[in-house]
Amino acid sequence: ARLVVLVSGAGTNLQALLEACADPAYGAKVVAVGADRHGIAGLERAEKAGVPTFVVRVPDYPSRQEWDAALTEAVAAHRPDLVVSAGFMKILGPAFLERFGGRVINTHPALLPAFPGAHAVRDALEYGVKITGCTVHFVDEGVDTGPVIAQEAVPVRWHDDEDTLHERIKQVERRLLVEVVGRLCRDGWTTKGRRVSMKCRTC
Ligand code: GRF
Image (cartoon, rainbow, N blue to C red):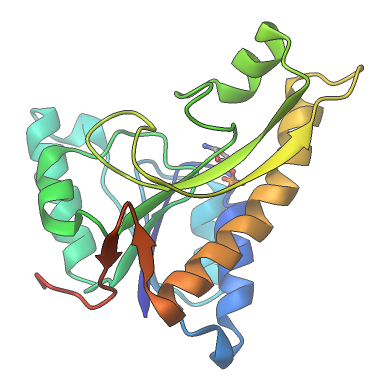
């Protein structure tokens, strides 16, 4: 399966996918990496792996709608079977979901539906939960609301701060994401009784 991975930061989840894809038995290949900003480690990781990259920045477009259309085209050009939002800090728009809906997954550093949004680890710590974790889910039009594919729990330690907790979650998150993408690409997936076809329908 052809993967397009979207990133906004360090790209350690991307790195885990790149490494998994090095094994032909994994059944997937990262064909492109997209970002919403320049100068991030995620793009460097892609370049180092010889994977094409593209950047589609919100401020370069007159409206969010036009940014959405441009991102959709940039991704479609690589004919993905599956789009992976791996630390991509933008909400994917209606045009994007219209084109790729059902074939876009996201990784989130909390046990959804608890702590959606951009500050999941901080919010979990502030709330005082003793167990948090990570979720891989399909993306729908809401913020971190799509059907859950897989979750794994991570205990909060007494001395955790946002960084130590996030780092421990990310270790689990990378493994979970690699596992989910591999299973999706090999077997397809059933969620809420709906089989997700891994063949590209629109491009
Ligand atoms: C991950 O925890 C992801 O869930 C969150 O941002 C982090 C991205 O990490 N939204 P990286 O860029 O893959 O290292």
